[in-house]
Image (cartoon, rainbow over all chains, first blue to last red; front, side, top):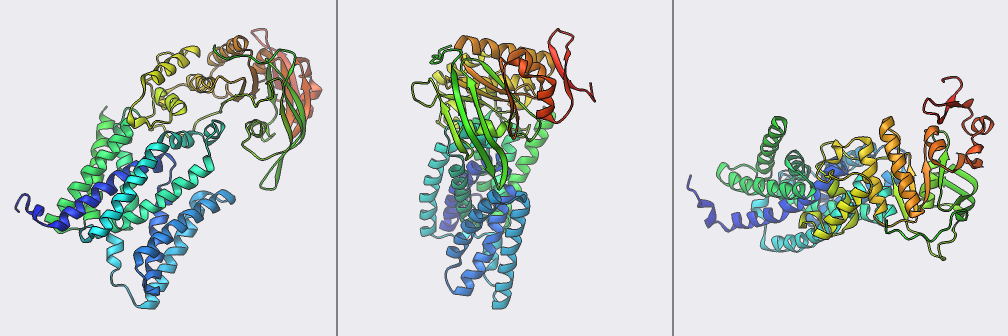
Length: 267
Length: 260
């Protein structure tokens, strides 16, 4: 094993670049995902994109586009049904999740087409192109700016939406807006982390930070740094161990969580 | 207090005519007509599910309603309204300090970009006004019920409100904490001549701190001064036999007869 052997391969640099964008984004959103208890919701978005991939293959278009479309659609569908139904949100989410996964499996088997599927299930950050990286960078900057503008408001809404509304915040618009941003980031992260583990990328850094932070600012920065550390080590680890980068990242993130939990118990 | 009073006691602050609220086809309030006196504490009492919180939300403009709500004697403008919710929804593990909570209500600059010193000073002053100095760096999950209510009151007072709405502020607070909170509220209300609307289940709090009472059960069952709290009116509101008993501190207390 040569130290810095990875540095001569442009694909590793591109993968690191993608991770340096996605990891902080997921951490910044993840803080609110944990506050709003949206982990299952983001799981539903990522799993429902399975149907998007299947439909893309069926229609002969780039599955990346149908995947993003399906993720956003299911995110908005859940938010809408949740607001208008007497059922609890995990029931609504479960129905939409199961329906779209079943649709995906049915279409794929009818097509006898299961090649390329691994790329979406496990993520293929090491195969990312310059064009995709550029697109990711633009979107990353935009979402990060939005999260900066909305941070305080989203925290107050999560604490008491009526209190937030009484102070003139457009609570419904912000909730829909956050669901939309979350759906976009989740679908884009699938290429990097894989659809099985996207939610972990949102939740684990935020959960680790909850164990360590002494305030909301600390919560944000610790989550961000945990995600970056796990992401970078995950990519380099996958290069040397020949493992999927997404899963390796999440494993390292889980170890960080374990340490944070032990530290909290000791204090 | 910096709050300017635009109201004169004895006048009406809010007039509600024929208010109705229906949510998801369920009629929660109907034909509610009442007036809230300015510069006094009005208490809304009624059983669970009577629509008390919904009435507050209608005043805040947070639920759609029929009928009219008119704000009077505020120079034709909608007055600033402060709202103290019953509780916050968070897991105890949330690392949010009292200063964090107050700051997100005051400033739009993301907390993780740092706190401005003038905001920190406002937070300190705000907490001092409600006797909560020194709580700045405590996690909100580690506060007692009374401390959290005082912090929420400080948040509501930050907007220099002319009307203050409180949703069961003493629920889940022990007796000394309740006394402390009610005395604090009285002081603030008198200093700023605030119009206070207070939902309470605790009829001893009502009889001790309110000047005006509204009995609500889907519609107004009775309203008026404290002498409105008669056995007959309480029966009409709660559908239970309720009675005023002399309290050990000398304040009247109300109990249902079946469970004194």
